[in-house]
Length: 361
Ligand code: PMP
Image 1 (cartoon, rainbow, N blue to C red):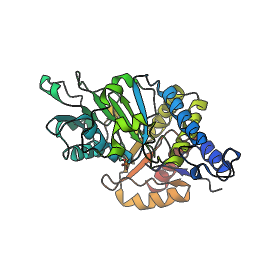
Image 2: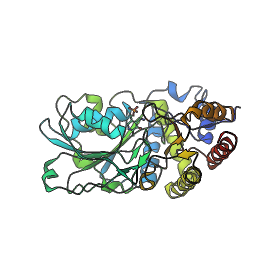
Image 3: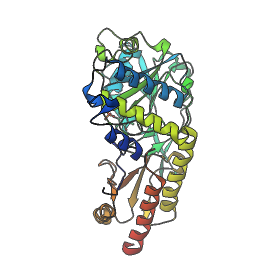
């Protein structure tokens, strides 16, 4: 087997043990002679898998009983549309904190369905990108919901505080941070995430929605996006992405076997500290994000000499360190270090960065 560490932002690497198990049972799942992706979603075996995955996710995140957990289609962007359609009328406003390109994308999509109001933007502090918590304004209280993205995958901007929203339900795009730390689900009206970073393969999205926010979808809402239809059918209103759902279930079991989110949280701290310490200790590498908002999942960094970018990437690949090229809108490098990235992967990257600086700095 090729021994590499994959720093892709998503679809991203999955835990080795999960992939090994999927391989083991790929052709003959549960002694059925078939693959899990060849059986009906309405058969007892798959229903067991689906229900177990939901139970494990509920355990991991301590999801209260008054929340539905939906396994659905359309990725993160699907929810950019599903949220306004389920939660707002055309004349209502939605509040948006724009902390990077994905929360910006949510505003553009909401513009089709309601009246989005941007209540905060990325600013600068000490010459670095910084997100200030907007003070609550009483005039916002009529808004349908308050949308934010606690971890911006492209920009590498993360914050762990909750926006002040009064009684307006908080809606969080957690595509690139879900399951990276414990969470108090009761603080949110809706949490959603595309699967392809910390949950499983692409094609699946997870929505955790408070009961009272379900059942108000607009008449024109596509049925597959209607939270009420999804909740009422155990997310089987139509054929769900069964293989992704099965694999997500294996990832949830893996997370539990690791010791749950407290253990994962510490490991994520350890990995991010290793990498940011290297960036801070060197003039050769730089981060454009203020230390208060540095993402633990996506670490963009720049070389002081951008003309070395392509050599850096080539040598990194030769060393088995894959997919480090930064997003085209940011440039430079980006190391995505989701839950599945072992500490050794980050150590290997830091050692490579030190060696590259020694030989090219
Ligand atoms: N939100 C965030 C934070 C993301 O990182 C992404 C994808 N990288 C999206 C939304 C869009 O997700 P998808 O491609 O699954 O629609």
